[in-house]
Image (cartoon, helix red, strand yellow):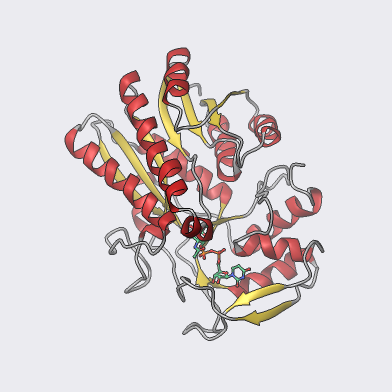
Length: 340
Ligand code: UD1
């Protein structure tokens, strides 16, 4: 199948972006990536192109650069945009809020204006389960109250608000807001994966670096939560399932215009100790750990009600935690220093 027009993926050289490019190529789309390379890699793009069996056109640039976007839209007939570019570290967002609002909020605004000027009105936006406040009940559905607790989360919510206002005012826009739960995993080939710079903030990359011997032990942040084993519970989602969710959203965007907002998660929660045990089983390595105080801002438990994604997109997550760990381990073992 060959669809007409380019699919522009901002942030396509990053972790989720590169997996999404593979899924788009496999679905027969023509893929164009716009990425600043601040947190992405051209090696990831080369590998995504080989895995997806197609070329990926690449333009280096920053979404805040309106002139660069205008030039890109003038050169390529783009039919839809997947907007994944952004900054995403919660702790850093607390220290540098203006940077987060500038990149995530101003960057999205600049992209929306450039799209409008170019007559491109189809968008899939990477949002996060972080936009929900502390959950009142589980699982979390899309009607749950919004109330992020840090600048990163608020920057995502501000973009969602822009999109809701835009779609209300101009119904020819077709927008999908995807609220990701906890993306982990790697391409099953072992060729693509998460390549965090410096010390990983998130659990899965930290665990895999301990397993491969790059770090001595995992600090488990809190073992006194009201969860079955006292450690935090999250909805971990395989990045290939997440990538498929983008392709499904693109396909499902209502032909008549409008906005869809869906959770992308598995609907299952796993504790930190579940993840460690699954990773040990997948890797055959021991993951030494110690219990440390709770991380400020963390919640006890969070998992998705993914039923709306199934209804509206025909999408559901296929991979379980064992598959996520197996694929992370294959990537980590084959690429101990990431793409470098
Ligand atoms: C974090 C972000 C969230 C973001 C998501 C992206 C925070 C508070 N939230 O979610 O906004 O969308 O990443 O994937 O940072 N843990 C440890 N030791 C570690 C690291 C984590 O015990 O070294 C625990 C955490 O306390 C938590 C679980 O592992 O219970 C998952 O943590 P993490 O991977 O950072 O994800 P979230 O905090 O859910």
